[in-house]
Image (tube, rainbow, N blue to C red):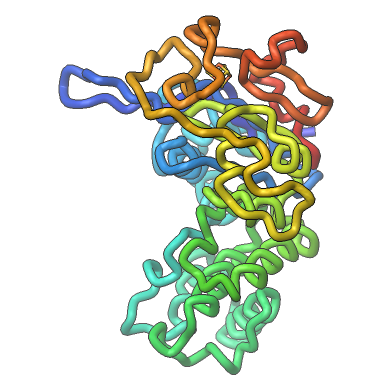
Length: 335
Ligand code: SF4
């Protein structure tokens, strides 16, 4: 069985100027697999600068890996033929943070939705195009008569973001990259949009990579999670275990920074107090400058240690446990 998506040992390094000085590793040796026959929602979580947006850009083909390869349905996305590239562009869609950015204020919603229909020749007539628009809008919980014919300023932020999701859905995607899709939407509308994304996975078989800094939304939408810090995987596993019982000091810090109204865990339970950031040694644990539990051994980058069959953390606090080959990370993640 071919995988839908495969990242094989992917790194992205940015350098400056002609001399390629001061390399910055935005993403380090990351391997992930999404199966073709098991649509899933995977959260990639981390703060700003963790590498999660670099990952989104790589998956969308906007930038190339420095090392490693990204395969879509078994084909390296850098060497797709013209028709394969067109299919990839249609089947891998994105929803970004800012629901305002994709709207031209001078065009109605109909125009925004008609463009992809024309570009990918999805309808043979105006009636069929209209039917597809209405079907996609209904699928994301909008009433077509409420939004068609309207201009962006006549819609709420929540409606605009749902229209973005509908626009992606029109193309019958196999994979949706949702990069902070609810962070600029009113808190009262977030749950609705997350529910819409979950429906896409359940009813339309769309796999979703949900990228966020917000673990509360991750908990409500995904089954599995990968926590990134400075471009490296710090912890990964099933979302329930990782968020309710985080095993990496960085994940504990993230969890402790948020009040949790719906979980058994009490806010502040782990009492992790981050130290001031210091100089970062590229060969050391990336979290070492902030880690209150740092030890001498942490001057070497830790591998992932397997805590349970569905949880692993890259931290020497668990070095009595077996290590996990980073290329087998996806085996820890429930579908
Ligand atoms: Fe902290 Fe060391 Fe674990 Fe890194 S490996 S998170 S520095 S205890």
